[in-house]
Length: 505
Ligand SMILES: C[S@@+](CC[C@H](N)C(=O)[O-])C[C@H]1O[C@@H](n2cnc3c(N)ncnc32)[C@H](O)[C@@H]1O
Image (cartoon, rainbow, N blue to C red; front, side, top):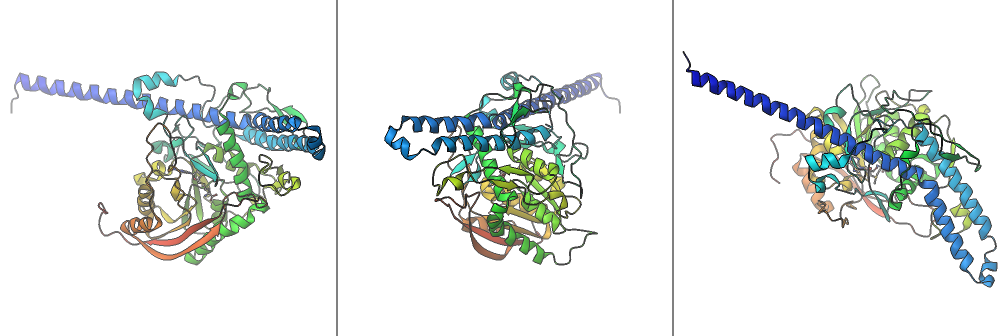
């Protein structure tokens, strides 16, 4: 067939048009990637700053308490003559906590070039509406009365991730799942420590940050995060998150947290043990722990003979868990004072000032199973990927499902990523993290009752095998006069083989 000249011209024009579109798409993707990286750097800077600001912020509290003490009339002051000594002790405790925090930052190898100077506003103006960018302050429940916003990545994340200003990090799936740029934080080899880490960070030789040791002696902090430019002024609420992390350390890595762990983690571990009685080291079952916090549950699951992967999107958490998992030399290596930040509900000064030694075990000697990893990123983004379909024998969620904007999406993904016949073990309340966000933005928050959660799970092919209620606390000070208790739902559900797509509830 002989085509007319006009036809050929039209074809050529179509080709050129397609070529132009492809180029525009590439450029768009490149801009998007650099925007995501800029946001992640910004977020990570803010988180490191929050950690760096901990000593000053904690000292400000003590100063405030001192001022109130000084305002007392002499007769009242005389009744509290031990207070100056208490303030002195509090400062020593802050020094010890700071020593731990700064050591942790020193070990942290940021996954991004933190020295880069990126003008986010430029991207914002050109690429997306502002409201999209600086959106959600994520409420990450630390203590029942406190919420903290999320954030994160870890010394070991190497893929790109994008974060909101508040610090929430969303994993960039394409990269997160690629082999070259895995975001996994691999657990320590038996007997020694760290993981292979890749750092894109130039090491700065500024040693201006002074680190007090546990005796209150001051020395300089060398290392990745000591660059003064990283110590920005951050809102006090960010430093609060650091305090929350300290409480989480007790839950996961102190003898004092054993009661909570026995209440929350033990039933899960016993259930897993019973459900996989014939597991063998040659072909261990694979278990995912979304919202893994500081990693203890994921480690325990690994030690029980599972390929265990923790998933966590908070940089605050990941920096800390990575340090404990990878850099601990011996059990009880560190002493921290988790309860000094509040004078409320205290039975005695000794309670408030009591030391807690961490970690209670040496993680590298915990007998982990090969393949233990911590994966940084948003659960929805990382595990919503098609490569994750049918990848897991078990999914364990502990105090996690209520972190969702849309819990139905979480359940749908959990169902998809489980193999047919796989199990979902859940323990936790339904304290929806976005339920009380009164930000300017209209944060999505779908808050289902337990009854509806179970109905949705049935829809996505789950069968309820076991169900009970477990009374427990979350990062609670066991010697406080205030103890918030949860009556947490505990269930085991099994995924039936799917017959057809479930599209309508
Ligand atoms: C209440 S804490 C529970 C931590 C741990 N499972 C425990 O029981 O101690 C919830 C955790 O989920 C994490 N998280 C919240 N939303 C997440 C998401 N979309 N993807 C991954 N992790 C998330 C938070 O950063 C936080 O560490």
